[in-house]
Image 1 (cartoon, rainbow, N blue to C red):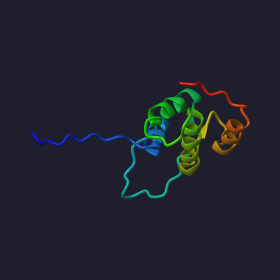
Image 2: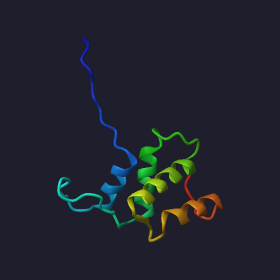
Image 3: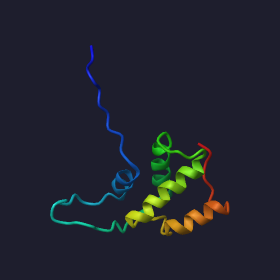
Image 4: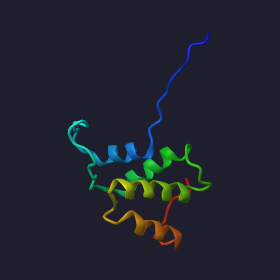
Amino acid sequence: NRAAKVSIEPNASSLLIKELKEPVRDRKKTKNIKHSGNISKERFLSVVREMRSKSQARTLKGTAKEILGTAFSIGCQIDGCAPRDLQTMIDNDEWELPEK
């Protein structure tokens, strides 16, 4: 029995856009849009936990910084703060992240 089983794993940008809860758009008509929304810290951490298995980072902090880079590239904010500011806060241990 050589039946292949296909499973689709979402990437970080699609998970963040899903968390923004934006209305459905026609992808052929509207191009290069900025997703200028706001995601809560709890929803952000759920995306980080979901992407943890695919991440190359050793710790949860590293995975969170990867996802913050993706959030910066699509143009959204986390708890009203810019993702770059949150990355520096993680580096300086000012933003508490749970271990698991």
